Length: 133
Image 1 (tube, helix red, strand yellow):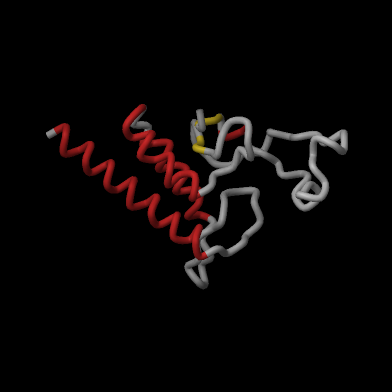
Image 2: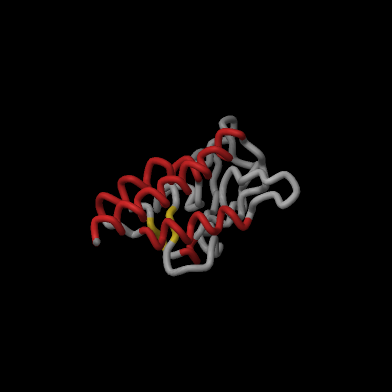
């Protein structure tokens, strides 16, 4: 349910306009453009097909074990993580809060979620390879 065509990501055209004091449903018309290409690949893991439609490291930390147990689509996991790592700050090494087109914001929590996600991918790829031998 969290895999989408990567060309249908959220454009974030209302970022900074809709917030807790201006709910999007009560101030029409708020158009949502789900036409941003969030990564290069055949599918992307996002926070939900009807939510932000962005790659979020915190959501991946919850989703990767479920994906391994259900569909084993580790290729989509790898592509989504690669996309996050392309946004890494080359000077400080800081990893992103979220994927494109979200603005570059540093969060220690989400920095660590990126690392947890890589550990999960390594663990489940290794476990999968061991089970095949």
